[in-house]
Image (cartoon, rainbow, N blue to C red; front, side):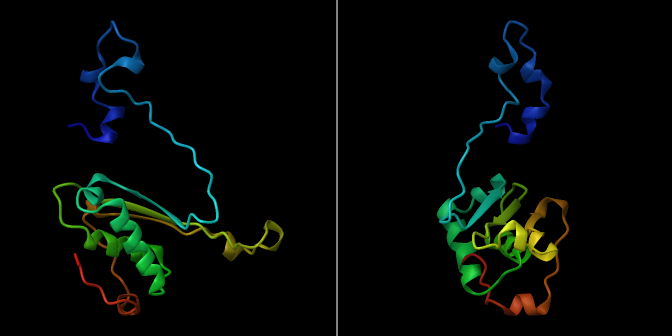
Length: 146
């Protein structure tokens, strides 16, 4: 099995001179899907295989929605909890959570604070854990894996 990020390297799989680049064993042309972001789309989760190896898409959606329902607004906290909630795997785990704010003010009414979108990347592969403030931990009872 070849990791997605390996499509950029692994030249040994791209050396067949009788084939054009797009027909080699490994290509770096991504599959792209365009979607319109409508008012019913609340958030976007982009995660590495380590997350998807132990959780389904619905598990992740339910987890993130529950965090929002408990009043957790810091996306970094949600990402860290999601990493802990996922079963330990042999894979590195990375998660990006983007929340869409459909009720945001018009451009003319935006303040600099409103303009700062909250996109948080959390990567468990670097061995560093973001320490959560005590108040963040108390916002919701956390029961890993269940």
